Structures are given as structure tokens and as C-alpha cells.
Amino acid sequence: MHSLAVTRFGAPLEPIETPTPSPTGTEVLLRVGFAGVCHSDVHMHDGYFDLGGGNKLPLSQLKLPHTLGHEIEGEVVALGPEARGVEVGERRAVFPWIGCGACPACVRGVENLCSKPRALGCSSGIAGGYADHVLVPHPKYLLAYGDTPRALAATYMCSGLTAFGAMKKVGEIGSQDSIVVLGCGGVGLMGVQFAKALHATAPIAADLDEARLDAARGAGAGATYRTSDPEAAKRLVADTKGGASAVVDFVGSEATFAFANAVVRKGGKIVVVGLFGGRATIALPMIPLRAISIIGSYVGSLMEAEEMMRLVRAGRVEPIPIQTRPLGRASETLDDLRSGRIVGRVVLTP
Image (cartoon, rainbow, N blue to C red; front, side):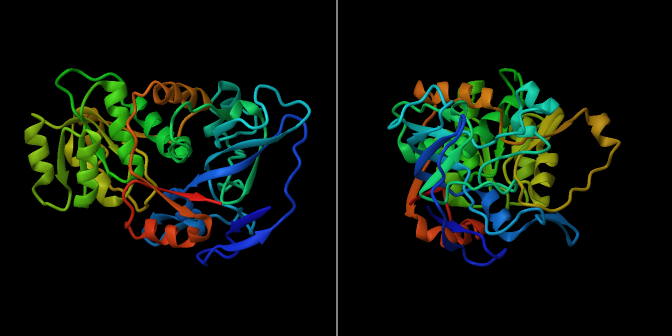
């Protein structure tokens, strides 16, 4: 099996050759068709998350070499003797947020919140999709995607699910309420789509980059604000008659949290999704005095993924811009994503 793997944190990925696994029990082996490149891959490639103030959360538990890639689409090529529900030759998108199966979170059906995760291509150390094959522990993690383009189907397993899960946390909104999508990269553009699908509203989009704002307008954003404009927050509050009902921060930086806090209305929600890093300072009395909620959102459950894919198969979600590149350009792509040079999503082909 050919893979591109992290062999040293921060260094270019290196090709490795290992035996192609043979599935046992309920396992399913897929030949990878497409593997999306996510900003989480950048953090795992770096080997840490930025906690602000010079502090880092190191991924010291991650044993190298490690194959990244958790947005995966592929063809079923072999089944373990107990695998039921899929057939050799079928194509599926892979739900990668797999838990231990026994903890309270897993029993509740929210494996993405498991404290001992077995997520594919992530910090659990289980090999992901930057390879020509991937092993999936059970057919239930293989989702049908209908007529969706194969490369796009891969991106729904993180980019889409992350946006979908975050937009569900917004909850009910009134006819005069506004949702702000803060950060319009690949996940943020999905956020625009799912705000429309779940809340029947054209959300407001905010970003530093004009090209991303153009993409957000193309995706259906009702209004856009460039966050580098020092008057942007004040104008947004005025234009929404007191601020947004919910701000979904797909960046998760000190600057974006400050912007979110400045534009959310009294009684509103800030949903923090992105992992860019840093540290936020907020006056604690203002949380109850303004009655705001600050919520973290981490991808989504298998049940949410199935719900999301029903919307996708029904054609209620428009595609975001997708570039395809050969697997050999994975290191270059990580650098491009790290530097903010990508609009939409890049998907690798082995």
C-alpha cells in the first residue's frame, strides 16, 4: 500500500510502502478515490495546536509515521467475513469520526466526542486517506452519496459535517434574525450552504479575503463584510438592528473571536468551530449581562452525517469550489492551506 505520511512534524510528507491490509471481522477495505485536505491536517502536520501566549498543545501521543486524511471517498474492494450492507465495487464516502464504541459518548451515539477516539487520519494515529487504500472498521461508517461528484462527496465527511453540525447548534431563529458565517474557506462556504438549507436564510459572510467573500456571495450569502475594515463590526451591528442572532466562527482565532463578540446581539450565540489558535479574553460579567452563549462545535455524529447526506442527495446543497491534485502534491497543498492561498477545497487523488 502506497501512502504519503508525516515522518517528522513540519517536514514534507514522505512516501511509504506497507502491506495492503486484509479486512477481518466487520472491516471493509476501500481503494481511495479522493482524499480532501483539511486545516486540521495542517495542525497535525505541524504537531501541535496553538493555545496562544506562546503555549502549544503538542500531539506527542501521535506515533510517526502517520498517514493523514479524514475526508475520504473510495471503492469497496474487500470485505471481512462479518461485514454486511455493502458490496464489492460500490462507492462510498467514509465517516471518519469513529469512537471506542463503549464510553458514554459512544453509547449516546456521538462517537465524534469519544475520549478515546479511533478517527481515521487524525491524532488517534489510525491511518487515513493520503494513501491508495484505507481500512474502515464497519460498513455503518460508509455513506451513500447518490449523484454527488465523487471529489465533493469526500469533503462532506469533514468540511460539510463540521458546517452542518455547527449550524444545527444555532437552533431556531426568528424571521428578523441574522446568522454570520465568519471565515469563508472551504468549511465556511459549506456553512453558507447549510445556513440556507437548515434555517431558510441567506447568511451574512465575513472574512479578511475579498476572493473568499466573492465565493461566499456566489454560494448565496445575503451580505458580506470585510473584517479588516475597522468599521465593519459597527456597520454589521447597525445593519442587523442590534447584532447577529448567531455567529459561527469557522476560523477560531483571537481576531475572529473578538469580531464575533463585537457583532453578536444580546441573547445571541457564538459557535466556535475553527482551530486556528490563540487565546480569547472576555469580561465574565458581560456573558450573563448580555445573556450570550459561547459554544464549541466539533464535526458531527454519524446520525448527523446521515441526516446531512439526505440533504445532499436531495440536491438541497450546492457545491463549493473544488480543486483536484495528485497525492504527490500533498505537502504543497498543506503549505498553500497554511498560507491561506486556497479558496474552497483541494482534494487529492492517489
